[in-house]
Length: 81
Image (cartoon, rainbow, N blue to C red; front, side, top):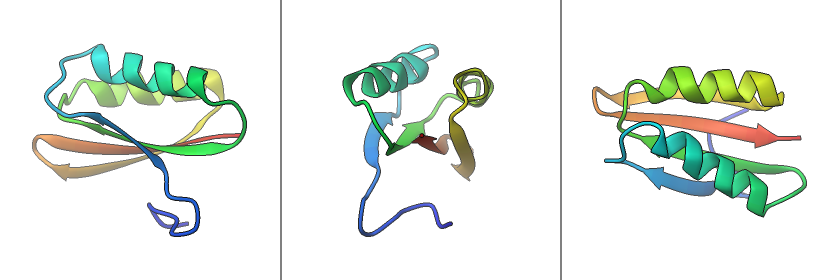
């Protein structure tokens, strides 16, 4: 599976420039707002967000793909089932 699906593009959560725990809070807010199966692309510039986001996804049983774009940009493709 590739990072972006052309038919159903993921909802983008732009948390660039936001310190922890904002990226995770923004993800939680988006997940709460939408029920059902959906993809989210969380963009974060906080290197600590990787631990928070991946741990949260494990606990919530969400699929999470991590991609390091640069030293200051991390993308997480999260899929709710």
